[in-house]
Length: 451
Image (cartoon, rainbow, N blue to C red; front, top):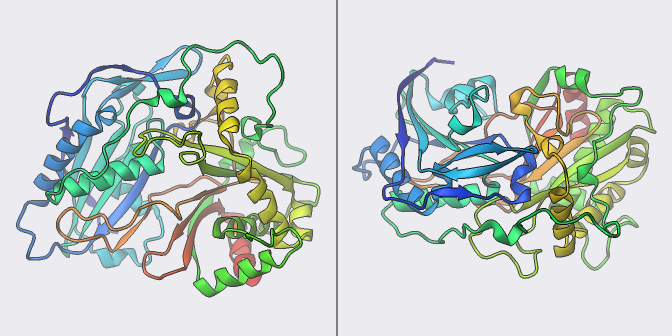
């Protein structure tokens, strides 16, 4: 790959004065992944009809969108007991301008590769958290005239839905259109203030997501598994393959005849079973699957439109490899379906109260980008599978046309997987998955042979 030349870095602050002060975060902001999540967009050469300057257009509209989404221009600061808060100080976000001698055609199928690293703004987690921008963007111009735009957004501030809300409004302002949905910034809806007294009686729900995921049988930690070399692949399931899997799952005794299993439940059940086979587990090996749920519409009342923060939580389906492999696909799908159905308003509130009563939240925080060996590990024998199927991730236009490809930046942790809709074809989906190098070929074989 051709080297990337970094031309300039800018700090972009809100275009007008914004509220400043300490901004308390909700419990769900402070657990799970609290590092930055990268997304990449690729554009063909801007058309003749675009008369502006690409860099100036992006900088100016980013400055204006931060007026509405001002928490993103602040900084985190640690508090005692493994908690943090947001300091809304308008210090701004980082925007990097870069150039490459390469061409867009060098990327072939756009699977995340080490070369992607240079297209994404890097975050140095060795720096004090108070100095790290919460939003970083990098525009790279290629020799062929094409462009890539990558954004790296702090998961401690927002989930995928909110990050895409900000990015799509940035595009609207760049095109000269008004804001579509004003962000709802008050997180007190998911925040009950002072820690509550301990529960008089145990909560009704078993929040498995707060437990340590299982280790490989015979191991007492996952240190060795974390060290193993991994590889990322993008695997496509066509509409007909997807329908085949769904009819297989829905024909099983575990399916609800009235509703059947969703795309997500079906594909995730299939991936979980294939991973167990590829990893060569013994039948009694416990395995957990982390599932990310958007609670916006599950709360009573539902969260306001444009709620800007983390409203997703992870739930866990658990089984043994032997059970998953010896039973039909519908069995795995039913475990996933049940874990998702558990997420009600009461479930969410009990989870919040549970976290409030914790002495320290560090053990629930996934800091893997910090090279930490702490926090939950959803690698072998486990898996984490996030759905981007319903996120409005395509069609980001800053005035020179929509992207022709978008996808995740690098994710190089064993078990880290995403399902996203295929941009080009109606009804097909893409699995972006990272597994240990030793298991990937077997996984790919099972993934297609078992359909």
